[in-house]
Image 1: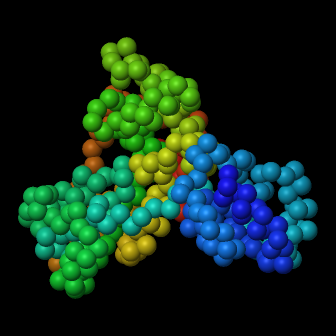
Image 2: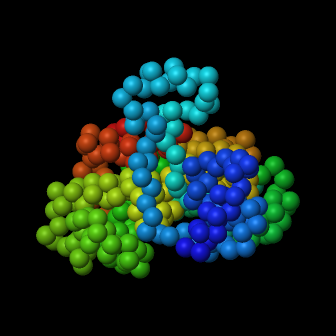
Image 3: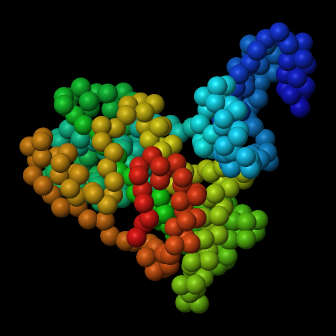
Length: 322
């Protein structure tokens, strides 16, 4: 409150200074504290109030009834795309510790959480004829740069998964099933505050296909609010947009290739063969329990998934999952 009071007072007496902040900058501590420093306010924010929620997180075009008239009137005044919804997802780090580099093969894999990491890592190990643990992992920036100097002509790649399938995997892995990878606090909050019908002790013999579909649909509805900044819960990397994660990769270096999972075998062969490595099969098995996505998938679920992950569908050209 003291920070807000001091900043407000300073802005009131600084009317001659013009400020232009994008909507996304309002969630950046560096930007807000930088504004305070510029104005000579000594106070700094340590963190934002997590109880604050974004209001109406949709594109401008969805908020008016006379869109055509508005666009005509603003045509000469604005350069902002009226169909663009503000991005409220947190900025992602490069995540170098998650990278997987070849023991000998000059390839670096940049995994996206809840993607086909296990299958791709096994494929890289097979190229080198080693075990997965023999690949270069848990690297620092210094170690990665050293690896790059030692492997001239290296290439990096990442693999994007269909957003709906990835969300379902994250749901089964971190929310539905109880175990060491469960997000316990988020799970309890989803049951109590967001009416996600999760079995308290995890799915058992009474947990039906209909129960699973209802729980996953409720989770998707939560994600729509979560990714729009309308919940106090963190946007976990397991279900954040892949677009945002790849933007985080570019903070260190952009991947040379972005491969779609449904084209995985062909694309990986096209990456490895010019380096002199033979085509090695790669397969991704569905491991979600107690039910896989194809058992509950329908048009209504697809439509909701496309709303939740609009950026990924647009950025990577995804169509319906089936």
